[in-house]
Length: 514
Picture 1 (cartoon, rainbow, N blue to C red):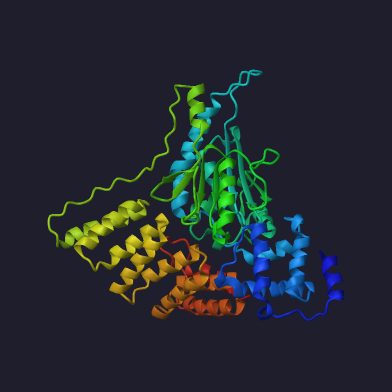
Picture 2: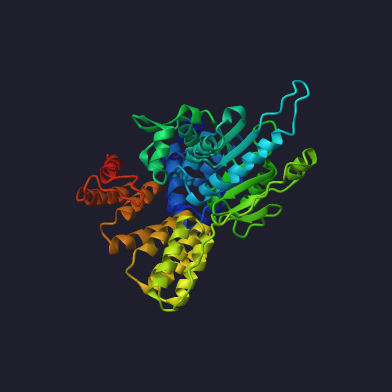
């Protein structure tokens, strides 16, 4: 690749065109090539950034035009994932931002329901297979795939869950696979070293139990590291399932916050390959709205309070019954926390309103989002202008993956209290989950306008600018945040979970400024 670029720098005039000189046909051509190669769709609102990224690569390679760059990509297309220039380009097109135990609702669903039931079923299935040569039962197996694993936090989160759920995991054949198209991200995952920022929603116990202090942050425990295999992978171009590799017969596939980059047809192709890569009885979990509008057949969609899960029904349950009729067919049913709604002795009773509000908050804590919505509607029936009821409803809808309803509830809350910041926080989070960084920044700026000392808003806004490569704006936000932190008690907790204090965040911000 280096030889190609140096040869071309001799053949062409060293005066590459500007990004605003790119013709529409040129952009359409290269966008199509990227979609065919990776499945990635360049959304219109990001095309200005996309053009700037292309210009960066054209200049770096000493090329003179977008047409030359296009032909270079075509020439190296068959070398993926080893082609250096494709790797340079993919690093500009994707965001590697992630953290441990991301999406608490889905992680709770995995920990408390899906994984325990899969584990129980796989353990029972192993007891139906006896090796005739030695008279011993087969070792139980469990196969999990983090597809689009980025820097590895999700795959390691799965390993930690498995470690806690299977005390005798050494007696199992367990595969936890992490794949990503971004090879530098895979290299970081294999190192297993993370900063405090990767632990922002996990408990301190997780860090102390499964990580060791390291000069660069925290290093994953060797036993957990050994449970995970990382390798490059292109969801669009790779062939799977295939028994020549490990990409087959998975009990669980996690592919979250990946399809936000894909075009509609690419998503359809990938989920079809996912279906046949699952073992019968296996599950696919995606981001909450990433399959909106897609035909999900032949998956059976199972709606849990925390998330939808896509279930591959098939021969496995029947196979267990045929081989061992005494083993009951496992049932995957939504386990919803039962909430006793208080009686309504008086339609205007303040005590009744408070009881309902307390019940809604409790349900939200227990991740019983359907209950939150139902109770909030009761509150609104009592008090149509109940600001907190709309906020709780919005949060429940967002956790349920219904972003349209969540947005609507936020807007209703803002009509009641236009200067409140709570709805803007949720709107910013929803925008980020949907990949709409422009809207997320606007909402965060409104929070800062209303509450100039807001630490979370500054922190998230600075992180977005940093991920976008806007160093100047990121540094500006970090300096403002540093001023705020300097005026706070250094031992003061800065989040509701008491997981980080002012001094720790201040150190993080200073590191960003250096």
